[in-house]
Image 1 (cartoon, one colour):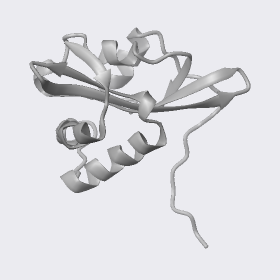
Image 2 (cartoon, rainbow, N blue to C red; image 1 turned 90 degrees about the vertical axis):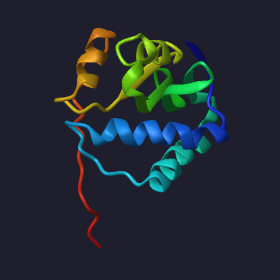
Image 3 (cartoon, helix red, strand yellow; image 1 turned 120 degrees about the vertical axis):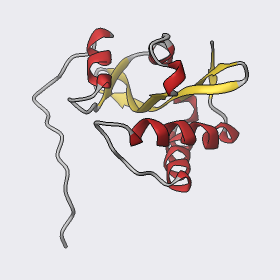
Length: 139
């Protein structure tokens, strides 16, 4: 396995893995490939230095998309997306991708997902007093 910086030309292949990963429970999301590519490309444009792919035999097997910014306690990195192709799961790909990050890191994970358990095993913890809110903005 090799971890390297994500390049613009990697995004389409990464988006295919993204679509497959999020179509499974507990997410059950139906992403169009064009929308997934645009979504990942937008995060890549924000901070390409925070985006990495894993490769095996010149095929992308997973990716992490993150962005960093200064914070009162130092540099803070937000992991926006982390996903691994099904055949490459449970082989250390996600762990290696996360370990490519540095500094304080935060993320949002679905509490019923394997991802939440993975992050706990990596040493992440729930942090308060913040809560995640979602809704439509009404004029």
